[in-house]
Image (cartoon, rainbow, N blue to C red; front, top):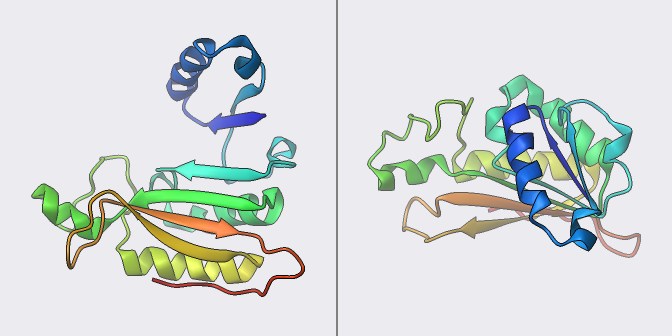
Length: 164
């Protein structure tokens, strides 16, 4: 089963149109709901994985702790996949490194900033973290998108965090 959560009604409507195009068996396993990923919701429980694709940069920096508490602490899935723009790559697009790609972005992190935040969150909630570049890698700036792959080790695994 899949749960899609967004605070933007238009985004939910677009997702609903896409879900309606799925075969009935797949469509019946998808639930879309209006909500915030910074509030604990019982619907977030019991999932094997949580993905937040291009989500965190839309949060105000003070909301990041609430997001981490909900996803990693409350939801507690075995796997979490997060993607976010790499601010360093903006120069490849001809942008100032301090300009955001989308006006609604509250921040865009460098690889180091994303790695530091991810390692701290992984340590706090008992996950391992592995950074993965998404897209072409350019020397000195990395890839356009950075992905954080977090896993909750089973009781036989060590609590290890990998940093970029």
